[in-house]
Amino acid sequence: MLTFEEKLAIIESFPELERHDVSLGRVNFHFEESVMDKKIVVYRLHPNGNGFVYAELIDADYPTDSKGMVNIRDFTEQELREIITQSMASLSEQEPFEETWINVENQTLKLINEYDTWNIYAGDMLDGSYATLNGAIDYLQQEGFRRMQEEDHE
Image (cartoon, rainbow, N blue to C red; front, top):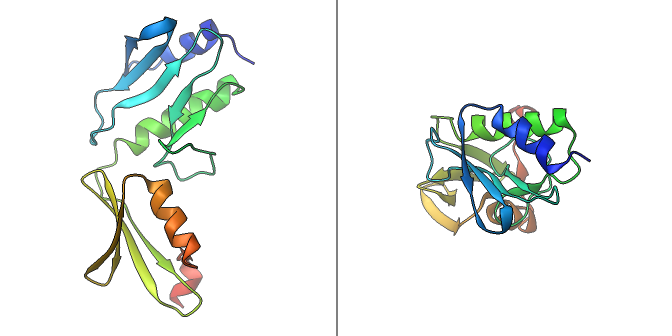
């Protein structure tokens, strides 16, 4: 496991991130160029080596909490660099996030990020609205939907 100092050195090597010292020796790093209201990329990096990186919008299978954060306690240097790079990229994307979900009956729903809210549409009708991407995905999966793949279009 990387030490606090090692993680700090890696994170500080990203000139796009701005350091903000918080309570109990913890440190946050903000990405001021974010196109979203979300600016914190590294959250509560603690002297004991624990900390979090925002990964809710990353198209990867990181286990996120309800705030879209991934615990980086046991990350290697390469893993930490990758997730920070992906996090900043996800907060830089100009195009609106939109996915189509489908169920076994070929019914489709659209998942769209609008104004920091995750909305699910059935056609033009709003079906649901969620504060987090994970909340919206949980709902879709519970209702029997999955992300539409290329082969679903055929």
